[in-house]
Image: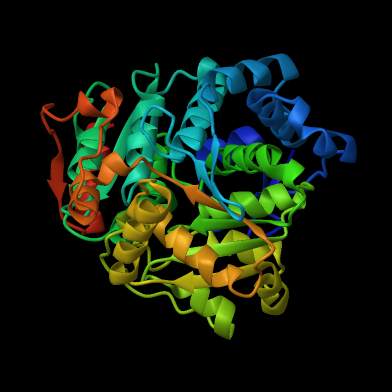
Length: 433
């Protein structure tokens, strides 16, 4: 499969090149040259396939020219070794739990697949690979867990100081070995800007073999499509139109859903659920895209004011606003509304949802007011314990912490503090690798 740049479609790369470069030279994003449609037989019989078998069929349709089936199966079986269960709250409301991986966040799917794929292609390389990743919360923890102690690969995680939860921060800063955390005195957008500048800086890329593990990397995006098929499989026998409500920050998750739909998954509609950082809902409503500095909110992983994957969304729709808005509805909500939603879900369903999932719930209910017959699946992107201080305060109850997260509570934080000046970041990179 060839991949092209969203900025210059004539600029092409192989899968291996696209994964290791992360970004094309023109600062676009890689997209598959063709999006294959899966067979009707496969789609109608999803219930007969395991999650790993579904993931293999989806990945093989896209990547069979690049990775032999036997090797791809090993990658899938190693990376996707945890479930994605759908929990039904009522006749028209479901939650897709994406927090059963090692870092308790949906990004485990993409990070683990990417780590295995990069390791596969990196076998014949002598020079160490340096993964740069910016995180607003969950990405860094998933990447750290996915790449931890992977031979020949160093990981550098940039995160905004004071803007991730304490346990999220421990996931970034307490592992050590090949994982380094840079604590940036700024916002997620500042972290992302530093990463992008490094990839476009030829002095850096000549000296350091760089790649990215953000959702800007196509190897992160593809595996996120797997669980849309897995979720649909679990509700398809109900015979209702299925909509996905996707809590959205950098919009990689929603873009992966659109990819699944293009491959044939019969999704009736997508809902872009955001907090007050609502530049995409604003675009869907008005046709005008106005990126702006992000605002800090309770749902911190969605605090993105200039979402990178919006370029991929535009590309999928050939920048045609009226077609995109017919497939996707967008809604933004305040922290106050998020808090009330968390309380409502707990009182009504005895279910504890995190702030990001609560935003997805609010958006689904707003959409269902006009579409009451549609079955909604809310993507619960992280375990509530990752935001334990806020969740326990709001719900006035104790939230159990899974053991794989609890062990980090007393671990020592180790980070390198840095400002937002690119020259300082560049000097650090060149001095360390």
